[in-house]
Length: 211
Image 1 (cartoon, one colour):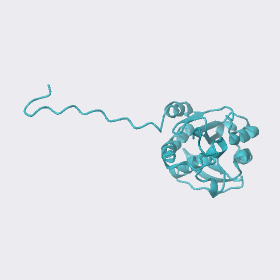
Image 2 (tube, rainbow, N blue to C red):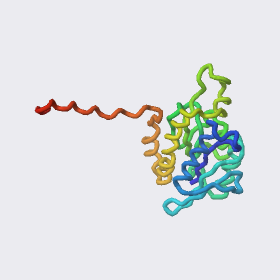
Image 3 (cartoon, rainbow, N blue to C red):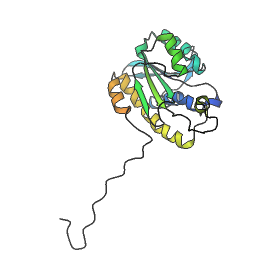
Image 4 (cartoon, one colour):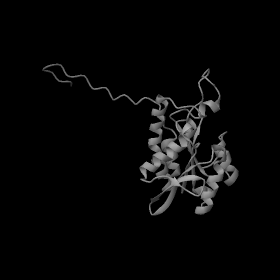
């Protein structure tokens, strides 16, 4: 399987919402104990083995709207079809703390997905990680400023909770359990406060019993 995280190259983009896809494959590389190195596919790639099969984590070094060029190259080199691909992206139409895994679909206004679909069609897995829309009246105010702007610490903390589960989602896909991954993770709200522990029963009065 080819697992592609989309983002923009360069240090000026590292902490932006548009690079959440890069963060996701970084989390996966840590879990699968592999490292990214330069590749001939206009990308940095990290190979790993799972259940005896070889797989690749990929970070294109093209800019976002040219991602399809890199993805099509590695798929051709590895002899993969669209069904062997997972693309991880940011999504402004999903709130921070939510994600959406789907086996196919449109680009949803995302330039990176649009580029990939232009090369290989739309029948590939995509994992959309919510980054929300800019607050009304926020400085700049536009979607471009929002996705290319720095991620505040509180928002980053929520995204880190999401990223922690990305390797598990990938594992389920590698096991052919995509529907299970969707049912388990698409409904989670990582921004929700943790549930309060159940209340402890009152202590019995001195010398007495509670029943």
